[in-house]
Amino acid sequence: MSKPIYILNGPNLNLLGQREPEVYGHATLDDVRDRAAIWAAQFSLDIEFRQSNTEGEIVDWIQEARSSACGLVINAGAYTHTSVAILDALLATDIPCVEVHLSNVFQREEFRHHSYLSSACIGVICGFGVKSYELAVEALAERLGAAAS
Image 1 (cartoon, rainbow, N blue to C red):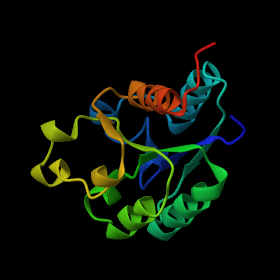
Image 2: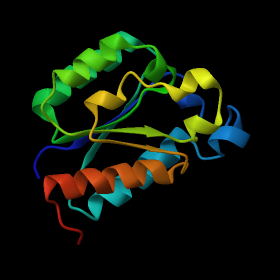
Image 3: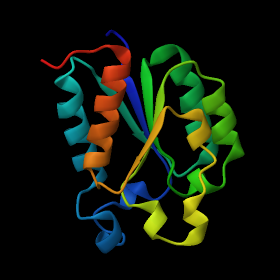
Image 4: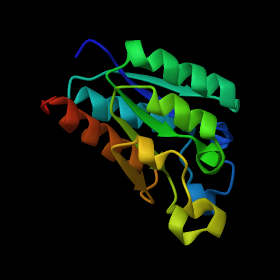
């Protein structure tokens, strides 16, 4: 595959390892990126890993991914539960997308049980911490027909 998988992260994920470690774990966002890159390499895939606290920037990246990526993993953080703009951007892509959450959102506050993004994704993975990203990369690799090396 010549195009990378885009892995996009939303607000407050830059605070991983510091913010609510009892919920999100002790891994930093750099740790998440490193593990995802190692996992993707097993399928001869590269990643483009980004984080923003700004909704519009995430929308711009999704639009960019339409022509620059072979697949998309998104952890939109709190925007998952609020952003029709991110949903619309995802619906405008023709690449497979997997929604990811570190925590099991269904064991948390009621407002976290609804995702605006899920309907635009091929699947949702939540509750496995950093492993959630690895599972998402593996699912995309399978969908893209990339074989493990």
